[in-house]
Image 1: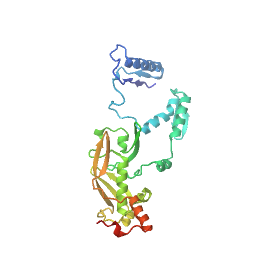
Image 2: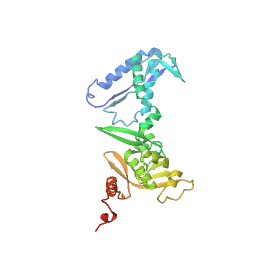
Image 3: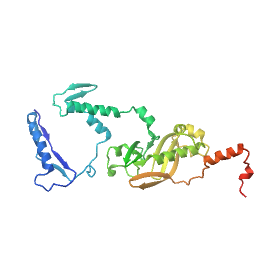
Image 4: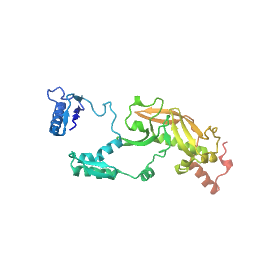
Length: 296
């Protein structure tokens, strides 16, 4: 029988009580050691090295957290109920289960309720730049939602950041997490100005863009042929690969751990829709004329 060497890891989130001769770490190690000893017949051998983390919480440990996909994989792993999965088939394993089957099946039922078909999720999501947006290095960014108090915040985040990469491991000079609403507004308003349709919905704007790349000082919007055909303002030169890219200058803003982009261009004055509709109503009522609206 091939031996299995077992390392025992213990942790306590605070230092309270660690000064005692027999503390929480010792109790954890004793319980784990007893379980390893009970599996001696299966070839389990306890390593003498101690792996103790006293006073470390999940918030201050310098380790990569589980990603959402890794947690789902862990919760769906049928090894814990004594089964082996091969392809689409499940076989009884030779190892004993370590979870009660009713508990495992209850978790599977709860997970199944959270699964939303990809197409339905895309229709329901307000993240209109999904599949379009990337960081300065070309890494795709995906929408995430965070809750803080009663507020909900939407972001676009690179995959490496979602998987827990440390800041020091990320490529320099890129934005790996930005607030979603400001960049969505920036792209939408740029496209509306391009085609001269200030109220065009996103469903009309989406066919105009193929890619959005965010930098700290600009947002690059790659246009489609349809966008070039509908443009009412001058376009930048066509690149060697045939693409047309609008580079919108931006200013990076940061506050309270949030980062967002704002247009660096001065906002052009826009006529208020209610004032315009009022002019039309006055005209139809016969109480308005161009002379009456002329100053002086």
